[in-house]
Image (cartoon, rainbow, N blue to C red; front, side):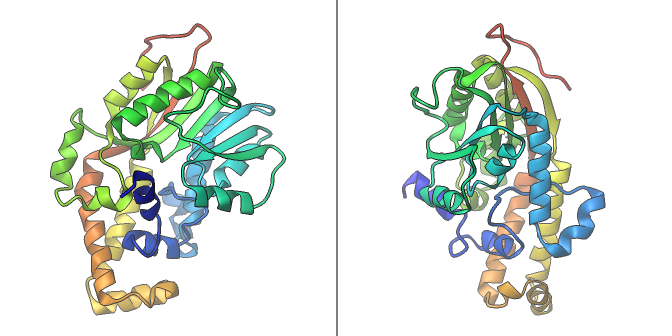
Length: 306
C-alpha cells in the first residue's frame, strides 16, 4: 500500500476501530491526543476536543508567535491550529501531504493571513515560499513520528534551512525512552500499534536532540509531557477497553456515546485488543515538546536545558 494512503487510512473511522471511538468523542478538526491536567478532567463528559485544544495552546505558548511573523504549520490537517496561529497576528502557511485534509482546511473558511499548500516537510522545494530563511517560526505538533528516522532528520534540516536567524522550531512528538528504537519490536510484537497509526518506530529522545543539534539548532528547552498526555490518555483508553470486554460495559459505553451503538461485539473486542496492545508501547515511550532555536551565529553544539 502507498505510504501516504496507509497514513491517511489510519485516521478513517471505517478502517481504524480506535479512531472510530475517538471520533465519536470529538476527534475531527484536531488529531492530537490532548493535554489532561487534573483540574480539567471534569470536562471529559463533553468530549476530547477541549483537551486537544489545551494541547495546541500549550504548544503555541512555546512557539511565542509575534504579530507579523511568518509561520509554517507542518501537517496542518484541517487547519484548526493554523488558524489559531493566524489569530495571534502571524502570516501562516499550513502544509499537509493528504489532499482531503487540505480540501477540508480550505472549506473551513478563508483567512486573510492563512494559505494551505500540498508539501512534504521532509523535502521542501527551495522556491517560494520555502526559500532559505523565509520563516520566523516552524510548528509541528504530533506528526513527525510518521516521518521515519531519515525523514525526521531531513525535516530538522529543512526546518533549519527555512528559518530566519533567531527563528524557532517547536516540535512536539512521541519519543522512545531508551537509545534503542528497535525495542518497539518487543513492545509491539504483532505490529498492532504501528499498523494502527502507520509508523515504524519512535525516535529515541537522546538521538532526537542530537539530530537537532547536528542540524544546527540550539535546544532551548525540552519538556516531558508524558504524564498529562499519553499516560492520562491511555488511562482513559484502558477504562474503555475494560468496559468493552463485557455486554454490560458495552451497553454503558453505548449510553455514554450513542453514535457507537451500532458497533458490533466483534468491533468492540477489536477496539479493546488494540487499546491493550498500546500499553507496553506507552510505558516504553515518552511524549516530549522540544523548543529548538536557530541562533544568529549559525551552527552550534549547545546542550538542552533540563
